[in-house]
Length: 447
Image 1 (cartoon, one colour):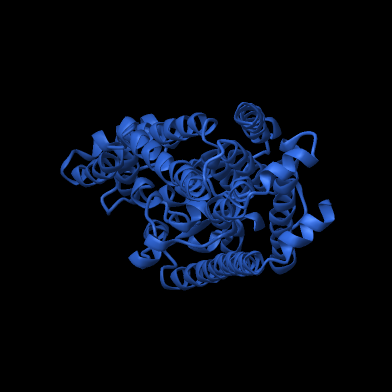
Image 2 (cartoon, helix red, strand yellow):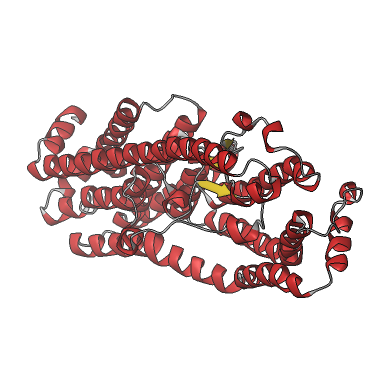
C-alpha cells in the first residue's frame, strides 16, 4: 500500500513540475554561491597584488622620509570566507570582507564599505539558505494542504476509517511520503552543492544539513496540526499560507524593528564626528598637550624627540591617535549595542524556528553579525599591531631601506565559530514534539 501511494504521488504532473522548478531554483542558488566565492577570491588576489605594487612604488618614490611614506601605505586585512559561506552569504552581502587600512585613524576607515548598486542591495543574493528558509515551506504547503481534506471532499475518508484501525496512521503515511520527497530534494541539492562548489564534508556542512532537515520537519509538523482541524482545502491552504507569512515575513520584520528601536546605534554617527574632530581640532591646539595625551596612551615612546624645528611626524600621528582615543567610548558603545541586538535576536529566535534557522545558517557559514563584529574587533587589533611595528621607525626617522617590505603581505581573519549542537537542534525538537502532540490531540477530538 505504501509503495502504491508513493508511486501515485510522485507520478503526479504537478508534483513533477514543482520538484523540477525547485531543483532548478536550488541549482541557480548554488551557482550564485559559487560565483560569490569566486568574486571573494578574485578580490583577495587583487588586493594582494595591489598591496605589493603600492608598497614597491611608494618606497621607490619616498626613500628618505619614513613618516611621509607611512601616510600613503595601506595594509589589507581579509575576512577569509569559509566555503560554507556560499550557502548562506549573510553579512558579506553588504559588508566588505577586506579592510585596506593605513596606520592613521582607525575609526575613519574601519566602517567604510564599498559602493554597490542600490538595486543589487535591495534584491540581495539568492543563496541556498534563502531557498530553504522561504521557498521550501511553500513547497511543503503545496504538497500537504489537502492531505486530509481531499479525502473528505472526494468521499473516501469514511472508507479509510473502516479499513484502518487508526485513521491517523493513514494521514501520517501520506505525510511521510511527501517528507521523503522533500528531504530527497534537499539532500540532492546539498550533494550538488558539494560537487559544484567543492565543499569540504566537515562539521559545518553536517550542521547545515541538520538545520535544513529539522527545519523541514518543523514545517511538516505545522502542516499536521493545521490539517488536523479538518477544514476544507481552501481554508487549510489559507491557514498554512498565513502561518508562512507570519513566521517567515512578519515576525522577523517586527522583531528586527523592535530591536532597532530598543538598541538604537546613535553612536555610529557620533563616533565618526568625534574621530574627525579629535584629529582636526588638534591643529589649533598646543603641540605639547597633544604629545602628553599621546604619551599617556603609549608611555613607551616618551624617549623619542618630537619638538624638533622641522615638521614632526610623531606629532602628526599623535593627532591621528587622539582622534581614535576621543571616539573610543562611542565606538565601544556602538559595538556593545550591536552585541545586545545579536544576543536579543538569538534569544527571541528560540521561539521562532525560521529566525533560529537563519541565525544558525549564517553562524555556521561564518557570515552572521557575530562573526562580523569579531572581524571588526580583530581589525582593531591588526591596526594596532601595524602601528606599533612602524611607530619606532617613524619616530626615530629610520631609513626606509632598513625595513623588510616583502614581509608585509595581507593578513587573514578566520571565524572562531563553533557548532553548538544542543542549541542548534533543541528548539526544533521541542517545537516538533509540541506540534506533534497538538496535532494528535486535534485529530482525535475531531474524529
